[in-house]
Length: 216
Image (cartoon, rainbow, N blue to C red):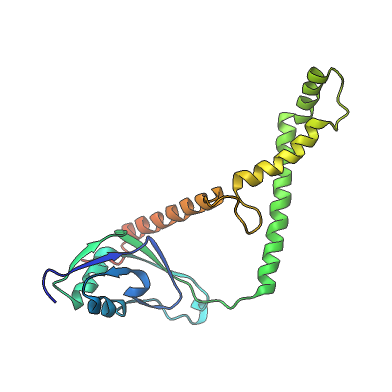
């Protein structure tokens, strides 16, 4: 291999693996004109988590690794290769053992979560309506427009009851398993932000505590 050979490497900020022996191909996307080098590097074992046994059998393990350490591992095999990092400078490597599917337990969790969300949302809406005195507002508005007192069940209340769930569905861009538009939903956006903040915190804390895998 010539000294001019270039290897492009890209690693995301968070990588989830299910094998406690981790190879470079498990965590990185590699590209080079030297395909033989790429194949060999993908098979290179770079890290091993503690073997899942006893208390670690179902436990998630996390390790923060610097791209500089990955470059050092590559240079052990190919000292003359020019490496161009196209991804993150530090990343979180998570090991999570594969779990057997339990459809009964998954369905039970879904039902319990649905009930919790339903009654929680209903209580929130009722508390909001009570805080802003929505009944009084509707009665006064109906009296000003129609000139007669409201009986408590008019076009305003019906429209509000219909518009509230429709507005929620449109805002969250989700109905059942289907999305109304291909855009990410607000929940997906917030979850991605949360995951990114968690990964950044892991990386910073590992760097401060000296637990990050990095070059000397």
